[in-house]
Amino acid sequence: MCGIVGYVGTKDCCDVLVNALSKLEYRGYDSAGIAVFENGEIETVKTQGKLDDLRNKLDTVGKPQGHIGIGHTRWATHGEPSDVNSHPHSGARVTIVHNGIIENYIELKEYLTNKGRTFISETDTEVVAQLLDYKYNGDPIKTIDDCMADLKGSFALGIMFKDFPDRIFAVRRESPLIVGVAEGECFIASDVPAILKYTRDYYLLEHNEIATLTADGTSFVNEYLEPITKELKTADWDMEAAEKGGYPHFMIKEINEQPTAIKTTITPRIKNGLPCLEECGITTEKLKKFKSVTIVACGTAMHAGMVGKYVIEDLARIPVNVDIASEFRYRNPIVSEGDLVIIISQSGETADSLAALRLAKQKGATTLAIVNAKGSSIAREADMLIYTLAGPEIAVASTKAYITQLSVMYLFAFELALAKETVSSAECKRLVSALLKIPDAVQYVIDNCEEKCKFIATKLINADSLLYIGRGLDYALSMEGSLKLKEVSYIHSESYAAGELKHGTISLIDDGMPVIAVATQTDIIPKTISNIVEVKSRGAKVILVCTDACARELKEGIADYVVEIPHSDELLMPITAVVPLQILAYYTAVDRGNNPDMPKNLAKSVTVE
Ligand code: AGP
Image (tube, rainbow, N blue to C red; front, side):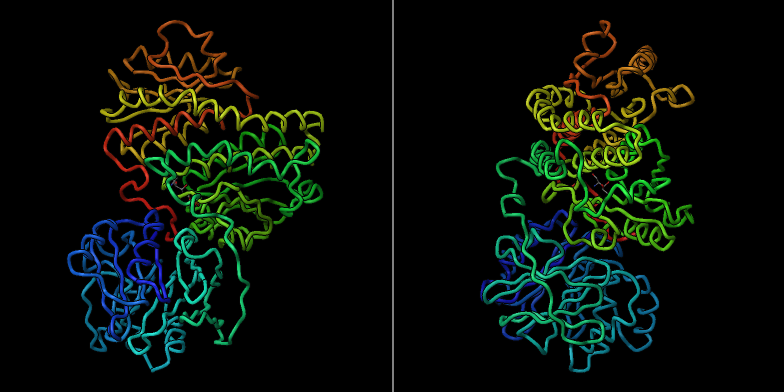
């Protein structure tokens, strides 16, 4: 969703805001703007388009000169991307930036209109600016508090009051916000990478807390307006982790970071050759009691859950449901005490996943979060927590977060199976040892398959539509391959269980239609091959991702292109097999002239429903 930033200090505020926004552009990139105190007045510059368009506008109209201000990069929710709908938004004495959604903005707009207020944009944010201005009583904190009582929905706000040119204010409910601090300066930001150039020290603003930022420091009050002291946190990411580091895009950089990300995620969770998740609050006693598992997530994270279902059911022999969070939360799902609900999320702030977590808790289930972003809402609210240690993932298309989510799903499945006594300790050790070899296999695929995938991508760029097919774990994986391709290349694609094609979808196949088949599971490879033959004989161009062992057995002409990946334990194959699918999606997007880091209509962190 949107990214918000704010600065109070001695530096050129405009430069700091634009730099900070450049680290948040992944959250939204259809318009951008800043507001800076210049000689006691609030000067606002904003525009439709990317941050570069804002830079150009600032060069043309002149940068506001000052040391205190707020900034915004937008992912439109209310009103099309346009100059007038861009943030910041203002009332006469108040200027704000906002991330989130005000659910009752229509009622509030009507109320304010009846009080004689007029509006120039279609946004819910302008309603908040006008409400603050309408309620302003000379005391910013009391005014903010008063307004919050009227607001329904989610918000993180950066606020400037014209009467207080030495400070900015920040408040949040649901939408994330941090307050960074350094010597003589402080910051607000939607996410840590925005401030890493200036400081690694920050406070996490909690729901309904209000922060005041001045050059002398920050102060906080809780929802009862009582002053509070907060725990200072230090980011363990450095600047380099949030930069492209010589790669043309974050997506390909993050694909290349996957071997390290897996190693970092699994190594500390293995003791004496066995999985050990005790420090995440997961014990054998707890695991023994669960009678079912439900995995709830969105998008790529949900696909990691699909792989998890196959693996947990296979090893631990307990039923696993996988649900899309936006469905789960409105479906009166059957979970209760004794059930485990796993929420998977890179950002830890996805609105639907967070709501699903709260619903599961309300129904008495035990919850486990698998999250990448430290200190995020889902991480804090779940009963048990396993962090994926992927580091900051900036590209909108998730790659290294997915692969670490898979790695955690495996460790969890091993541990659960041990607790349920469905695998022996010796078998578990064998699986763990195979998992420890996976980072090398992933590195091998990156080193040896990139050129081939790059070449195959040139054959996909003119396709109107593609199919991904596979069986079992390969089907679960092909869902992710298909999503990756469509989100960055804008080519329509679907994933299908290979055996299901003949029940309808095969009628789509015609001359030259690309079909990407994944075949890594020895016992079902012959079945998948039959399905490949079926589509090939109807004109499909087949790209087959399979193990080297499978490739050796292939008859001439079955596939048009074959991407061979090294064979590992079959259960673990999805971790290796996803890599060529990611690379294929990346190069298809690049060849079509798309920026894979900022796909149209998408944002990294979906904090609205
Ligand atoms: C992945 O490439 C997508 N950007 C998207 O599907 C994402 O996985 C989904 O929105 C869930 O996000 P989360 O992991 O932060 O909850």
